[in-house]
Length: 418
Ligand SMILES: *Cc1c(COP(=O)(O)O)cnc(C)c1O
Image (cartoon, rainbow, N blue to C red; front, side):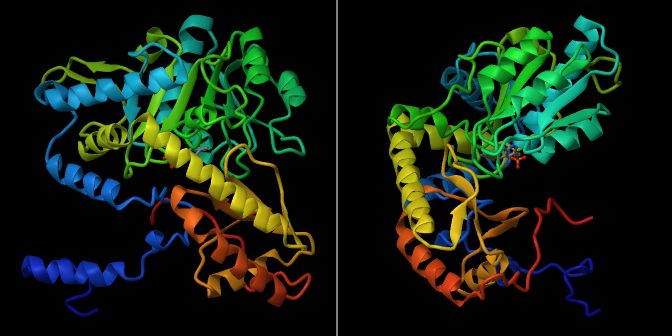
Protein backbone atom coordinates (compact mmCIF):
# COMPACT_ATOMS: atom_id res chain seq x y z
CA UNK A 1 0.00 0.00 0.00
CA UNK A 2 1.26 3.43 -0.84
CA UNK A 3 1.30 6.30 1.62
CA UNK A 4 -1.54 8.13 -0.07
CA UNK A 5 -3.85 5.12 0.16
CA UNK A 6 -7.02 6.49 1.72
CA UNK A 7 -7.23 3.57 4.15
CA UNK A 8 -3.91 4.58 5.72
CA UNK A 9 -3.98 7.24 8.40
CA UNK A 10 -2.26 10.33 6.90
CA UNK A 11 0.92 11.52 8.63
CA UNK A 12 0.85 14.99 7.05
CA UNK A 13 -2.19 17.17 6.69
CA UNK A 14 -3.20 18.51 3.30
CA UNK A 15 -4.35 22.02 2.57
CA UNK A 16 -8.11 22.45 2.05
CA UNK A 17 -7.86 22.66 -1.74
CA UNK A 18 -6.05 19.32 -1.90
CA UNK A 19 -8.62 17.66 0.37
CA UNK A 20 -11.43 19.02 -1.76
CA UNK A 21 -9.67 17.79 -4.89
CA UNK A 22 -9.43 14.29 -3.51
CA UNK A 23 -13.06 14.27 -2.44
CA UNK A 24 -14.21 15.55 -5.82
CA UNK A 25 -12.28 12.76 -7.48
CA UNK A 26 -13.68 10.13 -5.10
CA UNK A 27 -17.20 11.42 -5.67
CA UNK A 28 -16.97 11.15 -9.45
CA UNK A 29 -18.04 7.49 -9.27
CA UNK A 30 -21.12 8.19 -7.12
CA UNK A 31 -24.70 7.86 -8.25
CA UNK A 32 -25.63 10.88 -10.35
CA UNK A 33 -29.07 11.64 -8.93
CA UNK A 34 -29.37 15.09 -10.51
CA UNK A 35 -29.71 13.46 -13.92
CA UNK A 36 -33.10 12.03 -12.91
CA UNK A 37 -31.82 8.58 -13.90
CA UNK A 38 -31.83 7.13 -10.39
CA UNK A 39 -35.01 6.05 -8.59
CA UNK A 40 -34.37 5.45 -4.94
CA UNK A 41 -32.13 6.91 -2.25
CA UNK A 42 -32.72 10.51 -3.33
CA UNK A 43 -36.09 12.29 -3.57
CA UNK A 44 -35.28 14.97 -6.08
CA UNK A 45 -37.62 17.95 -6.07
CA UNK A 46 -35.95 19.18 -9.27
CA UNK A 47 -35.68 22.65 -7.81
CA UNK A 48 -32.33 24.50 -7.68
CA UNK A 49 -33.55 27.29 -5.41
CA UNK A 50 -34.76 24.72 -2.87
CA UNK A 51 -31.45 22.88 -3.00
CA UNK A 52 -29.42 26.08 -2.50
CA UNK A 53 -31.53 27.05 0.49
CA UNK A 54 -30.95 23.65 2.12
CA UNK A 55 -27.21 23.94 1.56
CA UNK A 56 -27.11 27.34 3.27
CA UNK A 57 -29.20 26.11 6.18
CA UNK A 58 -26.98 23.04 6.65
CA UNK A 59 -23.93 25.28 6.91
CA UNK A 60 -25.70 27.66 9.27
CA UNK A 61 -26.47 24.89 11.81
CA UNK A 62 -23.40 22.75 11.26
CA UNK A 63 -21.98 23.01 14.77
CA UNK A 64 -25.05 23.02 16.98
CA UNK A 65 -25.84 19.94 19.07
CA UNK A 66 -29.47 19.00 19.55
CA UNK A 67 -28.59 16.73 22.48
CA UNK A 68 -29.53 19.63 24.71
CA UNK A 69 -32.05 21.80 22.87
CA UNK A 70 -32.51 23.93 26.00
CA UNK A 71 -29.34 25.87 25.16
CA UNK A 72 -30.42 26.20 21.52
CA UNK A 73 -33.87 27.79 21.65
CA UNK A 74 -33.91 27.83 17.84
CA UNK A 75 -33.53 24.05 17.65
CA UNK A 76 -36.07 23.50 20.40
CA UNK A 77 -38.59 25.66 18.57
CA UNK A 78 -37.96 23.97 15.21
CA UNK A 79 -38.28 20.55 16.79
CA UNK A 80 -41.57 21.44 18.47
CA UNK A 81 -42.78 22.94 15.19
CA UNK A 82 -41.84 19.84 13.17
CA UNK A 83 -43.68 17.50 15.54
CA UNK A 84 -46.71 19.78 15.65
CA UNK A 85 -46.82 20.10 11.84
CA UNK A 86 -46.56 16.32 11.36
CA UNK A 87 -49.18 15.77 14.06
CA UNK A 88 -51.47 18.25 12.34
CA UNK A 89 -51.06 16.55 8.96
CA UNK A 90 -51.78 13.11 10.39
CA UNK A 91 -54.50 14.06 12.87
CA UNK A 92 -53.16 13.90 16.41
CA UNK A 93 -52.21 16.24 19.28
CA UNK A 94 -49.38 18.71 18.49
CA UNK A 95 -47.11 17.36 21.25
CA UNK A 96 -47.75 13.63 20.77
CA UNK A 97 -44.50 12.58 19.17
CA UNK A 98 -40.92 13.39 18.31
CA UNK A 99 -38.52 13.73 15.47
CA UNK A 100 -35.85 11.11 14.80
CA UNK A 101 -32.87 10.55 12.52
CA UNK A 102 -34.81 8.48 9.99
CA UNK A 103 -37.46 5.89 9.31
CA UNK A 104 -35.54 3.12 11.00
CA UNK A 105 -35.20 5.05 14.25
CA UNK A 106 -38.89 6.04 14.17
CA UNK A 107 -39.80 2.36 13.73
CA UNK A 108 -37.45 1.29 16.55
CA UNK A 109 -39.11 3.81 18.85
CA UNK A 110 -42.64 2.69 17.93
CA UNK A 111 -41.71 -0.95 18.55
CA UNK A 112 -40.05 -0.09 21.88
CA UNK A 113 -43.07 1.94 23.02
CA UNK A 114 -45.41 -0.93 22.08
CA UNK A 115 -43.25 -3.51 23.81
CA UNK A 116 -43.12 -1.50 27.03
CA UNK A 117 -46.83 -0.65 26.88
CA UNK A 118 -47.73 -4.35 26.47
CA UNK A 119 -45.49 -5.34 29.36
CA UNK A 120 -46.56 -2.62 31.76
CA UNK A 121 -50.24 -2.22 30.97
CA UNK A 122 -51.26 -5.64 29.70
CA UNK A 123 -48.82 -7.83 31.62
CA UNK A 124 -47.50 -9.55 28.47
CA UNK A 125 -43.91 -10.55 29.23
CA UNK A 126 -42.99 -11.39 25.62
CA UNK A 127 -45.23 -9.33 23.35
CA UNK A 128 -45.17 -10.17 19.63
CA UNK A 129 -44.88 -7.93 16.62
CA UNK A 130 -47.13 -8.82 13.65
CA UNK A 131 -46.37 -7.46 10.15
CA UNK A 132 -46.97 -8.34 6.51
CA UNK A 133 -44.03 -9.85 4.60
CA UNK A 134 -43.85 -6.52 2.72
CA UNK A 135 -43.18 -4.49 5.89
CA UNK A 136 -39.85 -2.69 5.79
CA UNK A 137 -36.84 -4.67 7.11
CA UNK A 138 -36.46 -2.00 9.82
CA UNK A 139 -39.15 -3.95 11.73
CA UNK A 140 -37.09 -7.15 11.56
CA UNK A 141 -34.08 -5.15 12.68
CA UNK A 142 -36.02 -3.61 15.57
CA UNK A 143 -37.36 -7.03 16.60
CA UNK A 144 -33.82 -8.36 16.54
CA UNK A 145 -32.31 -5.49 18.55
CA UNK A 146 -35.19 -5.26 21.02
CA UNK A 147 -35.41 -9.04 21.35
CA UNK A 148 -39.05 -9.55 20.47
CA UNK A 149 -40.64 -12.10 18.15
CA UNK A 150 -41.92 -10.96 14.74
CA UNK A 151 -44.73 -12.93 13.15
CA UNK A 152 -45.24 -12.55 9.39
CA UNK A 153 -48.55 -12.43 7.52
CA UNK A 154 -48.73 -13.06 3.74
CA UNK A 155 -50.05 -10.55 1.20
CA UNK A 156 -52.91 -10.99 -1.27
CA UNK A 157 -52.52 -10.85 -5.05
CA UNK A 158 -52.89 -7.05 -4.95
CA UNK A 159 -49.82 -6.81 -2.68
CA UNK A 160 -51.81 -5.80 0.42
CA UNK A 161 -51.66 -7.62 3.75
CA UNK A 162 -54.01 -10.61 3.85
CA UNK A 163 -56.32 -9.43 6.62
CA UNK A 164 -58.02 -12.84 6.97
CA UNK A 165 -54.62 -14.32 7.74
CA UNK A 166 -54.02 -11.39 10.11
CA UNK A 167 -57.26 -12.12 11.99
CA UNK A 168 -56.03 -15.69 12.50
CA UNK A 169 -52.61 -14.53 13.68
CA UNK A 170 -53.34 -11.75 16.17
CA UNK A 171 -53.94 -13.04 19.68
CA UNK A 172 -53.62 -12.04 23.33
CA UNK A 173 -49.81 -12.03 23.04
CA UNK A 174 -49.77 -9.49 20.22
CA UNK A 175 -48.28 -6.18 21.28
CA UNK A 176 -48.12 -4.37 17.95
CA UNK A 177 -49.68 -4.84 14.50
CA UNK A 178 -48.15 -2.97 11.55
CA UNK A 179 -49.67 -1.77 8.29
CA UNK A 180 -47.78 0.15 5.58
CA UNK A 181 -48.94 3.32 3.82
CA UNK A 182 -47.58 2.32 1.40
CA UNK A 183 -45.10 -0.56 1.47
CA UNK A 184 -41.82 0.08 -0.31
CA UNK A 185 -41.75 -2.86 -2.78
CA UNK A 186 -45.17 -2.24 -4.44
CA UNK A 187 -46.38 1.20 -3.32
CA UNK A 188 -49.73 -0.21 -2.15
CA UNK A 189 -51.44 0.96 1.04
CA UNK A 190 -52.58 -1.88 3.32
CA UNK A 191 -56.21 -2.00 4.46
CA UNK A 192 -55.51 0.13 7.53
CA UNK A 193 -59.12 0.27 8.91
CA UNK A 194 -59.37 -3.52 8.97
CA UNK A 195 -55.85 -3.96 10.37
CA UNK A 196 -56.40 -1.35 13.10
CA UNK A 197 -59.78 -2.90 13.90
CA UNK A 198 -58.27 -6.36 14.38
CA UNK A 199 -55.51 -4.90 16.58
CA UNK A 200 -58.00 -2.96 18.71
CA UNK A 201 -60.22 -6.02 19.19
CA UNK A 202 -57.29 -7.74 20.90
CA UNK A 203 -56.13 -4.67 22.83
CA UNK A 204 -52.96 -4.40 20.71
CA UNK A 205 -51.42 -1.20 19.39
CA UNK A 206 -51.39 -0.50 15.63
CA UNK A 207 -48.52 1.23 13.87
CA UNK A 208 -48.83 2.67 10.37
CA UNK A 209 -45.50 2.80 8.57
CA UNK A 210 -45.91 5.91 6.44
CA UNK A 211 -42.16 6.52 6.21
CA UNK A 212 -42.58 6.62 2.45
CA UNK A 213 -46.11 8.00 2.04
CA UNK A 214 -46.54 10.23 5.08
CA UNK A 215 -45.25 13.40 3.48
CA UNK A 216 -46.97 12.77 0.11
CA UNK A 217 -50.43 11.35 0.89
CA UNK A 218 -51.83 14.51 2.57
CA UNK A 219 -51.05 16.52 -0.58
CA UNK A 220 -52.28 13.76 -2.89
CA UNK A 221 -55.59 13.92 -1.08
CA UNK A 222 -55.71 17.71 -1.38
CA UNK A 223 -55.15 17.61 -5.16
CA UNK A 224 -57.98 15.11 -5.54
CA UNK A 225 -56.14 11.81 -5.89
CA UNK A 226 -57.87 8.79 -4.36
CA UNK A 227 -56.17 8.05 -1.02
CA UNK A 228 -57.45 5.16 1.10
CA UNK A 229 -57.75 5.87 4.86
CA UNK A 230 -54.37 5.54 6.56
CA UNK A 231 -53.85 8.06 9.38
CA UNK A 232 -55.15 8.85 12.90
CA UNK A 233 -58.62 9.43 11.44
CA UNK A 234 -58.77 5.62 11.39
CA UNK A 235 -59.89 4.30 14.77
CA UNK A 236 -57.31 2.02 16.36
CA UNK A 237 -54.22 3.54 14.70
CA UNK A 238 -51.90 4.36 17.59
CA UNK A 239 -48.65 5.48 15.95
CA UNK A 240 -47.35 6.68 12.56
CA UNK A 241 -43.78 6.91 11.25
CA UNK A 242 -43.24 9.40 8.40
CA UNK A 243 -39.94 10.54 6.91
CA UNK A 244 -39.46 14.19 6.05
CA UNK A 245 -36.24 13.16 4.28
CA UNK A 246 -38.32 11.40 1.60
CA UNK A 247 -41.27 13.26 0.06
CA UNK A 248 -40.76 16.16 2.50
CA UNK A 249 -37.76 17.07 0.30
CA UNK A 250 -35.07 17.69 2.84
CA UNK A 251 -31.67 16.06 3.05
CA UNK A 252 -31.09 12.89 5.04
CA UNK A 253 -31.59 12.58 8.75
CA UNK A 254 -35.15 13.61 9.58
CA UNK A 255 -38.20 11.49 10.29
CA UNK A 256 -41.23 11.93 12.54
CA UNK A 257 -42.86 9.49 14.94
CA UNK A 258 -46.29 10.51 16.19
CA UNK A 259 -48.74 8.80 18.55
CA UNK A 260 -52.45 8.92 19.22
CA UNK A 261 -51.76 10.17 22.75
CA UNK A 262 -49.06 12.13 24.52
CA UNK A 263 -48.98 9.32 27.12
CA UNK A 264 -47.76 6.83 24.50
CA UNK A 265 -45.17 9.31 23.19
CA UNK A 266 -43.78 9.76 26.71
CA UNK A 267 -42.79 6.08 26.79
CA UNK A 268 -39.90 7.07 24.53
CA UNK A 269 -38.36 9.19 27.26
CA UNK A 270 -35.23 7.93 28.97
CA UNK A 271 -34.06 9.42 32.26
CA UNK A 272 -30.86 8.50 34.06
CA UNK A 273 -30.04 10.28 37.30
CA UNK A 274 -27.27 8.14 38.83
CA UNK A 275 -24.46 9.35 36.64
CA UNK A 276 -21.59 11.42 38.08
CA UNK A 277 -22.04 13.57 34.98
CA UNK A 278 -25.46 14.70 36.13
CA UNK A 279 -29.01 14.02 34.99
CA UNK A 280 -29.12 12.56 31.49
CA UNK A 281 -32.45 12.71 29.70
CA UNK A 282 -33.16 11.81 26.11
CA UNK A 283 -36.25 11.22 23.99
CA UNK A 284 -34.81 9.18 21.15
CA UNK A 285 -32.04 6.62 20.62
CA UNK A 286 -29.29 9.05 19.66
CA UNK A 287 -27.37 11.09 22.22
CA UNK A 288 -25.60 13.85 20.35
CA UNK A 289 -27.89 14.86 17.52
CA UNK A 290 -26.95 16.74 14.35
CA UNK A 291 -28.74 20.05 13.99
CA UNK A 292 -28.65 20.50 10.17
CA UNK A 293 -31.40 17.90 9.54
CA UNK A 294 -33.71 19.72 11.97
CA UNK A 295 -33.09 23.12 10.40
CA UNK A 296 -33.17 21.61 6.89
CA UNK A 297 -36.59 20.03 7.41
CA UNK A 298 -37.95 23.21 8.97
CA UNK A 299 -36.58 25.28 6.08
CA UNK A 300 -37.91 22.90 3.40
CA UNK A 301 -41.40 23.07 4.87
CA UNK A 302 -41.38 26.84 5.27
CA UNK A 303 -39.96 27.37 1.79
CA UNK A 304 -42.50 25.13 0.05
CA UNK A 305 -45.59 25.61 2.21
CA UNK A 306 -48.70 23.52 1.59
CA UNK A 307 -48.97 25.18 -1.82
CA UNK A 308 -45.50 24.07 -2.81
CA UNK A 309 -46.09 20.52 -1.58
CA UNK A 310 -49.32 20.32 -3.57
CA UNK A 311 -47.50 21.50 -6.69
CA UNK A 312 -44.75 18.92 -6.20
CA UNK A 313 -47.37 16.23 -5.50
CA UNK A 314 -49.00 17.08 -8.85
CA UNK A 315 -45.62 16.60 -10.56
CA UNK A 316 -45.19 13.23 -8.85
CA UNK A 317 -48.71 12.25 -9.93
CA UNK A 318 -48.03 13.31 -13.54
CA UNK A 319 -44.69 11.50 -13.59
CA UNK A 320 -46.50 8.42 -12.28
CA UNK A 321 -49.02 8.56 -15.11
CA UNK A 322 -46.34 9.06 -17.78
CA UNK A 323 -44.25 6.16 -16.52
CA UNK A 324 -47.11 3.70 -15.88
CA UNK A 325 -48.86 4.46 -19.19
CA UNK A 326 -45.56 4.12 -21.04
CA UNK A 327 -44.65 0.82 -19.37
CA UNK A 328 -48.10 -0.64 -19.89
CA UNK A 329 -47.88 0.38 -23.55
CA UNK A 330 -44.91 -1.96 -24.02
CA UNK A 331 -46.20 -5.39 -24.94
CA UNK A 332 -44.00 -7.66 -22.87
CA UNK A 333 -44.10 -5.59 -19.67
CA UNK A 334 -46.51 -5.40 -16.77
CA UNK A 335 -46.80 -3.55 -13.47
CA UNK A 336 -46.98 -6.28 -10.86
CA UNK A 337 -49.26 -4.51 -8.33
CA UNK A 338 -51.38 -1.41 -8.96
CA UNK A 339 -49.80 1.22 -6.66
CA UNK A 340 -51.46 3.98 -4.60
CA UNK A 341 -48.52 6.36 -5.14
CA UNK A 342 -45.96 6.28 -7.99
CA UNK A 343 -43.72 3.70 -6.33
CA UNK A 344 -44.02 0.33 -8.02
CA UNK A 345 -42.50 -2.78 -9.51
CA UNK A 346 -42.68 -3.87 -13.15
CA UNK A 347 -41.57 -7.05 -14.83
CA UNK A 348 -41.51 -8.85 -18.19
CA UNK A 349 -44.10 -11.60 -18.67
CA UNK A 350 -41.53 -13.69 -20.56
CA UNK A 351 -38.82 -13.80 -17.88
CA UNK A 352 -36.46 -11.34 -19.59
CA UNK A 353 -36.61 -8.57 -16.99
CA UNK A 354 -32.99 -8.85 -15.86
CA UNK A 355 -31.75 -8.66 -19.47
CA UNK A 356 -33.91 -5.56 -19.85
CA UNK A 357 -32.37 -4.18 -16.65
CA UNK A 358 -28.91 -4.72 -18.15
CA UNK A 359 -30.01 -2.83 -21.26
CA UNK A 360 -31.22 0.06 -19.09
CA UNK A 361 -27.90 0.04 -17.19
CA UNK A 362 -26.08 0.46 -20.51
CA UNK A 363 -28.32 3.45 -21.26
CA UNK A 364 -27.36 5.09 -17.96
CA UNK A 365 -30.46 4.34 -15.88
CA UNK A 366 -30.20 2.94 -12.36
CA UNK A 367 -33.13 0.65 -11.64
CA UNK A 368 -33.23 -1.37 -8.42
CA UNK A 369 -33.74 -5.06 -8.97
CA UNK A 370 -36.15 -6.63 -6.50
CA UNK A 371 -37.44 -10.20 -6.13
CA UNK A 372 -40.27 -9.73 -8.61
CA UNK A 373 -38.87 -7.21 -11.08
CA UNK A 374 -37.56 -3.66 -11.31
CA UNK A 375 -38.47 -0.94 -8.84
CA UNK A 376 -39.37 2.65 -9.64
CA UNK A 377 -39.88 5.45 -7.13
CA UNK A 378 -40.83 8.71 -8.78
CA UNK A 379 -39.92 12.24 -7.67
CA UNK A 380 -40.91 15.55 -9.23
CA UNK A 381 -37.66 15.58 -11.24
CA UNK A 382 -38.69 12.41 -13.10
CA UNK A 383 -41.45 14.20 -14.98
CA UNK A 384 -38.84 15.76 -17.27
CA UNK A 385 -37.21 12.42 -18.15
CA UNK A 386 -40.35 10.29 -18.60
CA UNK A 387 -40.31 10.33 -22.43
CA UNK A 388 -36.62 9.48 -22.60
CA UNK A 389 -37.12 6.68 -20.09
CA UNK A 390 -39.93 5.09 -22.09
CA UNK A 391 -37.98 5.44 -25.35
CA UNK A 392 -34.92 3.76 -23.80
CA UNK A 393 -37.06 1.09 -22.17
CA UNK A 394 -38.73 0.32 -25.50
CA UNK A 395 -35.27 -0.17 -27.06
CA UNK A 396 -33.99 -2.24 -24.12
CA UNK A 397 -37.04 -4.53 -24.36
CA UNK A 398 -36.63 -4.89 -28.14
CA UNK A 399 -33.00 -5.96 -27.81
CA UNK A 400 -33.52 -8.35 -24.84
CA UNK A 401 -34.00 -11.91 -26.09
CA UNK A 402 -37.35 -13.34 -24.91
CA UNK A 403 -36.84 -15.39 -21.77
CA UNK A 404 -33.23 -14.25 -21.24
CA UNK A 405 -32.56 -13.87 -17.54
CA UNK A 406 -29.74 -11.38 -18.14
CA UNK A 407 -26.19 -11.20 -16.86
CA UNK A 408 -26.81 -9.55 -13.50
CA UNK A 409 -28.45 -10.89 -10.40
CA UNK A 410 -31.00 -9.51 -8.00
CA UNK A 411 -29.53 -6.75 -5.92
CA UNK A 412 -30.02 -5.74 -2.37
CA UNK A 413 -29.88 -2.60 -0.33
CA UNK A 414 -26.73 -2.09 1.67
CA UNK A 415 -26.67 -0.09 4.85
CA UNK A 416 -22.94 0.04 5.43
CA UNK A 417 -19.77 -1.97 5.19
CA UNK A 418 -18.74 -4.11 8.14
C1 LIG B 1 -37.48 4.26 3.80
C2 LIG B 1 -38.47 3.41 4.51
C3 LIG B 1 -38.26 3.01 5.83
C4 LIG B 1 -36.95 3.22 6.57
O1 LIG B 1 -36.54 4.49 6.57
P1 LIG B 1 -34.98 4.93 6.65
O2 LIG B 1 -35.10 6.40 6.65
O3 LIG B 1 -34.30 4.36 5.45
O4 LIG B 1 -34.41 4.39 7.91
C5 LIG B 1 -39.28 2.34 6.46
N1 LIG B 1 -40.42 2.04 5.81
C6 LIG B 1 -40.64 2.37 4.53
C7 LIG B 1 -41.93 2.00 3.87
C8 LIG B 1 -39.68 3.06 3.83
O5 LIG B 1 -39.86 3.39 2.54
